Length: 153
Image 1 (tube, rainbow, N blue to C red):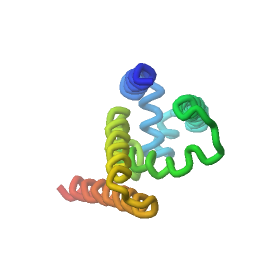
Image 2 (cartoon, rainbow, N blue to C red):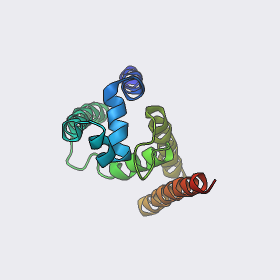
Image 3 (cartoon, helix red, strand yellow):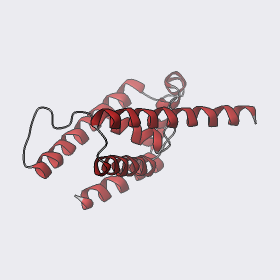
Image 4 (cartoon, helix red, strand yellow):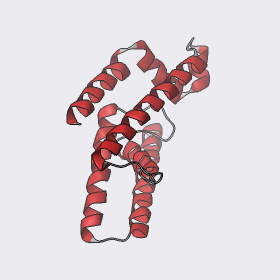
């Protein structure tokens, strides 16, 4: 599992930082209309990003199912909030076009430590969701404040 994660981090860091398609994805995330005016085939790139997302979701489902030795309809319920929080904690911007693969991994590790810590402390699931929501709000607020400082400076 660790080998697969390391391979994916290396592959996607390379693609995002060193290839044309990676730059096009960042451009679309920053401003879709400007990317289209720059010659990026926005519909084509978005289609392949969604295909890639589907493949990665299938891989994650296979790994998660093999780890639990079972497959249930509610096995991944609630992971959406963790994924969004991991991205924002890792430095992705609300407005798009910013963020790194390594940042998302660091955000995921922070969320995993939070989940594990709250479980060990015996915090109820309702309170865990509320705390995670507050963490997301804090990360988004921090991002927006940094953008305002950058504009005024």
